[in-house]
Length: 149
Image (cartoon, rainbow, N blue to C red):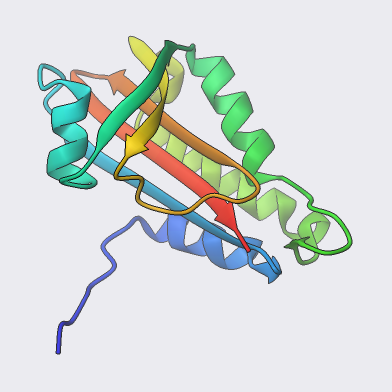
């Protein structure tokens, strides 16, 4: 028997729990910190998936990344899928996400890039997906999230 321990941030686990819903599940993970001198694909291979292969790396900004991530996290869904009672949970979700953003100091990041996976994606996306490479305070962070049914 293999025992797996979930070492992700408690804020991330709570956000996932709050966003659970009808035919809808969210997965998030913050990887790092990595040495910023290590290439992104090497960081992904060492911390995310040994099969990781990059695609579509494009520059972003701290504010654009924050906005896009929050738009996805607060995705309302429709009658057939989506988080349950999102309006009641919105304030707590935003508070928790701000704690995650503060932990990686995204607002002061020196470099932010959005990227995709050609291979080795850690979760299967259905409704939305994001992956960001974030450099702040001499550290590299990789923040990935997706939603599925």
